[in-house]
Image (cartoon, rainbow over the protein chains, first blue to last red):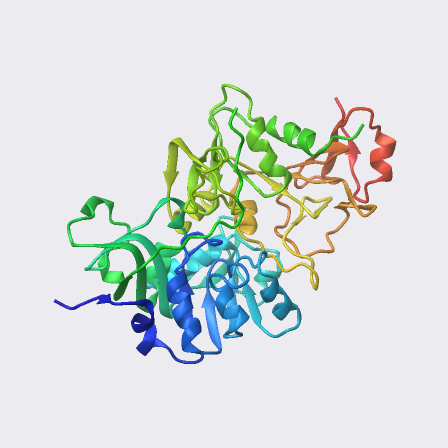
Length: 234
Length: 214
């Protein structure tokens, strides 16, 4: 049986990296980010990366790690609001940003992973993101042609994974992870708990192992809260 | 007295109906969550992959895996469901969400909305806003009427658009406007904040509108 399990993030990414490659990363804010795998990419020193992710985390955490080291040449994302380093680099013209509406981004990745080269969507008609895109009317409504995204490498974070690569996510840490897992030549998953096949109820598996080439159990799970909001007990 | 942020949100909450699936933007729209009329069943959609958002957690009970689209810690409730970003925007684009209440930087007299960037200044992004205005059948914008003395209700947006002719209702600290798409003028003043008169609204509004007060 092919072994998908790697001892740590550094060895899991080691032979997959080259300058100029496209890397997809799951996560929303700091929730469900494959932070150990991102740290391994940072440590490798690989450069000139195109990163596809919803947003580049905050300074020094998540994709923010690669922004600080200037390993990111281009970001394809829907939002970059909470990363001051990225904002500075972008306003100085040092990094390229391709803004995508969040739903369009998700669907482009879904299409890329599902063998659909392009699709039409009503999102963004009449705005700056429509520039240069083919427009066609369906049922009297103009729509934009958007292309699928398929990367060289996808990084995802899951709550549980088995040695076959079947994954289960937790609460809103699911977000972009399942779709990212489908849309790259190689997908690497970091998991909080690595379990034996059968330990996750097959009815509950969210990402089937076919999409996952490598899996790494995190030695310790460090999660970040971007905005702590609480209510007082009455 | 113009409405304060809480009162703007309270006016927006009156647009909700029993059984609605509702998406709230960041800023003033977030306040609407605390102002849902008692006995009304509303499921709040969070674009990062959740329907049925509960209140903020009690101190010490926060979970880093449970956040809303504004990245704030929240809680789940018995009706909650979780899903991925593809399903989340399928709900949005597919017209399954009944209403979205969003913040705005500018609204034009034909219902164009600009709320995602100020070129050269603000590096944020549209997030899910362009998908929401394209897919959700009713779009309510809540915002301060003016910013630095300039009207945010404009003839034409000077900021990059989020969507063209997408706004149905605008609620500001001074007044409520309905947008009748396809009519000219499309903007109708339908309500005033307490002790605000039409002259004050006119003086603070760059867009053309007609009075349609009850």
